[in-house]
Image (cartoon, rainbow, N blue to C red; front, top):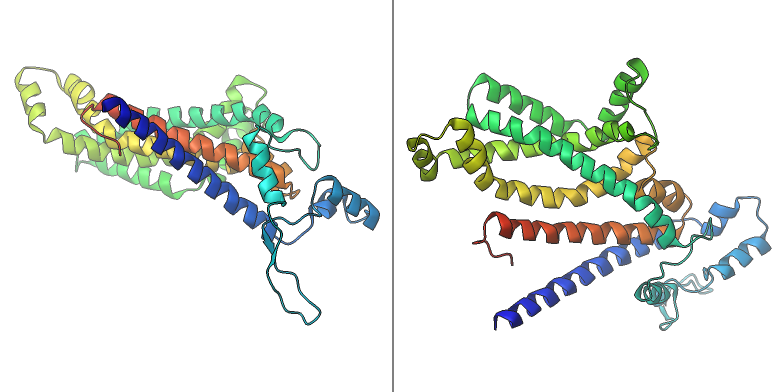
Length: 332
């Protein structure tokens, strides 16, 4: 029975993953199809001849219907739904996905999968670095604030956290570039050429998350400090540092881990703006510069697919960490 339950749980999670991925990519496909403009004109330019545009559309199947139905206008200007069967771009795309083929980019004619996975390590590097920055800042500050509840230190750190949450990344990023790259010359402003190039974009991306985590850690520490096991540990003669970091913090990390797991996906999405600011060669920059701006449907679909799958896998990893922190927790 236990094995059967585990198999059912795995099947349920796989079904949810597939449903979420299908929903996200379908919505993105619908939106990019509804956006005005022609990919052939966007890529070939306004000077392209009608024959070149028609050839481009045939080459990439853009002359075929996008979905199962269309609503063309008749001579009277009325629109009626027309069924096109299973032969459309939407179905063809998912057929290719089932065979591991994300299609080809309209602009470069390269495989979308190849283009994404060239950039994917850079995005993961930036997201993980931002997560490390956020945790490194939030845990000590949150513990200090929780231990000094109601004091000047707590109030000061609360204000700092509020400011960190309020200031958007597109303000923090240019400010850091101006101070540390332009004025001081300590760090590179753009690209991924040097190891230290990660610092400024990671701090920019992790700043808001560190502010949020600081408040979460503070609340958890305050709550755990009132528990009986803390009084017992102190009665045994354990020093305050040992009590805080060995007992209080471990038990208080469960809600923090929840935020971390969810925010990893948010970091991947938020990295789009940060990558644009710092010209960081990740999936976000690829999505904006080569996908959306050029109306490269296949590239946009591929980027969204990879980001959504990564987000779901991050949530699954969060569930596993739940169980490690507290085996009594059952994740539904």
